[in-house]
Each structure stands twice: as C-alpha cells, then as structure tokens.
Amino acid sequence: MPTAEEFHVVLFTLRIAALGTVLILGPGIAAALVLARYRGPGKGVLETLLSLPLVLPPTAVGIFLLNVLARRGLVGAWLARWGIEIVFTWKAVLLATMVMSFPLLVRSARTAFEEVDPRLVGIARTLGCGPVAAFFRVTLPLAWRGVLAGTVLAFSRALGEFGATVMVAGNIPGRTQTLSLAIFHESQTGRDDRAQVLAAVTVLLAFVTLWTAEIITRRRTRRAGA
Image (tube, rainbow, N blue to C red; front, side, top):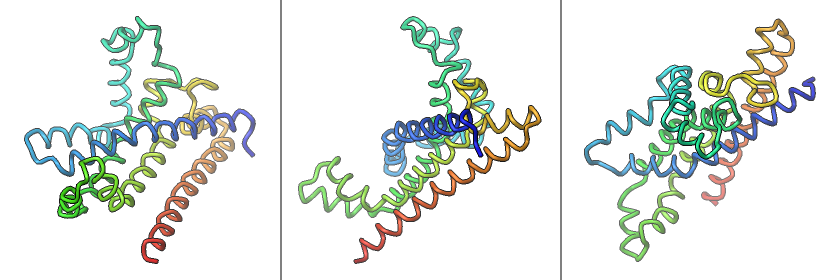
C-alpha cells in the first residue's frame, strides 16, 4: 500500500495534470481550429513548431525551458524583477506538463475540426449566427469526440511526464516530485518494491482516465442516436 508520502505524490501529480489540462484547453482548441481552417502562408511552420515537443527528447525541451526561465534568461530575469520564481518550483512542473501535453490536444482536436463540413458552419452563419455562436452551436458539438480524446491524451501525458520536468523542476520530494519522478527515485535507491507500487498506481490512474472518457463517449453517442 502507498505510504502517506506517496499519497501526497499521487495527489500532487493529479492536481498538476488536471490544472495543466484545464489551462491548455482553451489555447489548444483555438490553435486546432486555426490549423484546421487557415490556408495561408506560414501554416507549415506553425504546425511544425506546435508539434516539436512530440518529436524532441523531453530533456531537450526541459533544457530549453530552463534556459528561458532561469535568472540568466530574458524571461527569467523579467520574472525575477517581480519576485516570481518558476524554476525548481511546482510552477515549473505545471509548465513542463503543459508544454509536453499541448501538441496531443491540438492534433486530436484539429483532426476533429477538419472533419466538420464547412457548409454546415456556412448555413449557421447565413441564419444569423456570428463566428463564436457558430463555433459553439455547430463546430464544437460535431467535433466534441476529437476534443475529448485530445483532452484525455493530454491529461494522460501530463500524468506520466518525466524528462522535461526533471530538467526544469528537479526531483525535490514534497515540492516538485511527481509520480514518474518518484518511481525513478525509488528505483535508483534500490527500493524496487515501492517503485512497483507507484507504477501500479500510475497504470490504475491511466486506466480510469481512459475508461471514464470511453463511458462519456458512449453515453453521448446513445443520447445522440435516441
């Protein structure tokens, strides 16, 4: 059974993953909609930039964030003037999970938006709906499965984030240690039994997340067909 300290790690990881997913939801949907509808110059560059965290080693992303947010970095120096510290705090954990999970949300939502017939949106516009109203009344209801899938993938990715987190936030017990970092720490210190318990908890959380999303999808599908 997990100890009190391990329960704290689990709760911390869940809070960070949930908060990070909520924070990227709005920007992720907006970015996905832009990629699905925009046909002008620079689209390929934007797509590449948004997808980079998927192909780069997580440690490379962590190094980049560390250089940007450290006191010697431009952003870090500006934040330091306001007394804001991010590196090696829970805020760094949150930022790392957001950066690494953001592309998964965008790619899934973008695919869903591309499958929505633009003519339906055009009809809604001719009936008096503005761009925002047409999005919430037509586009989003038709693409909700893809958005939900992307949200679940992003949350699951945030639960298991390791490489970028350890670079920009460290592995500080009680402060920045997440489940994946705790598993690594326990394994490195020879406590494989505790590492296996934490790994089992991680598998359980991931299973419950995916199972819940599947139940929601099925219920919405049944209601739509009723």
